[in-house]
Length: 364
Image 1 (cartoon, one colour):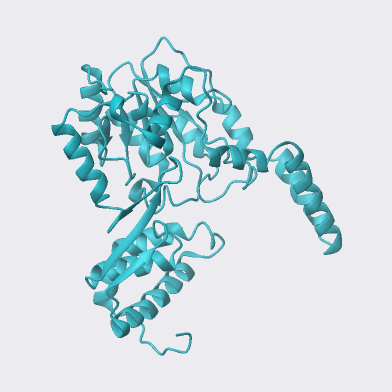
Image 2 (cartoon, rainbow, N blue to C red; image 1 turned 180 degrees about the vertical axis):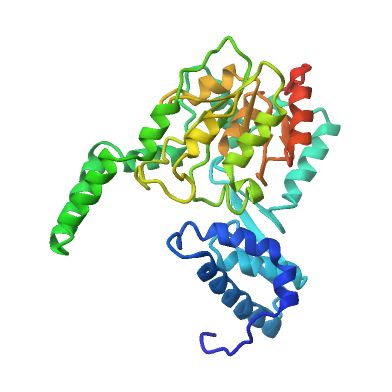
């Protein structure tokens, strides 16, 4: 297949994939962050031409993905398959035991889950009917004092703290000595440490929350990651999420925003495409938005809030399991569950918040 000859994509094909292009250019922030916009676009168009040729030549009945397509090339394949009426089949890990669910399209939902929810509505299903892994998860989320932190969050935290962090730093030092980049790295570190950086900006705008006020809680997503791009769509821009919330919030309510606990571990404290200079300041400048300390307990904030806000994160699922309303801005696997509000704009956000303000509650 590497020697396949193919034509570059034409105007009509690229026009039909315009939404895909927008998503892919953003998705490239993960592996091609230093590329210019036009360089990204040209690479994207190369992928479109190649995979359009492959799919039209071999005409597969279906394309199967082990997870949600999100690594640029597979998202191009997914989008082309939809355009060519080729079935997509994909899986999503839901972090409950070792379970996964499948879908034809993550943007339209998961068929078996939708059917199950619809059936349970008619049968008055409640939490007492849960068994197995789901029962354990529900009890974990509702048992006072129990640490329900997801395993992947603990894993990332352990990788970039304590002995593991020291080991990582030593490896970097030894490697830099071997490749003679040590002095350059020291200079970069000094500039980063004493100059402007993400942590300094965050600390400059953070405040301790006032729990006498009504508020919604928005824990930011770790980025770059598929849970925001492609699963967040346009709301991979978390500033847009905050601005939408701010415009829709009931009078007297606040938005408490907290950075993801792992964001400064793997990527360090440098500004980058998803956390550019002024990022936190822009959020904090909104009249009803408050940036809160990273070390505050998320579950306590969740408990005290009127609602939890996320794009597709675990926080939305945890909120629903704890009978707390959740506002979802992306294509989360659990978005059809009771207590979940799918938000697309200011109007839908305002309608959801007003419903919550007027006494909406999640039933057990």
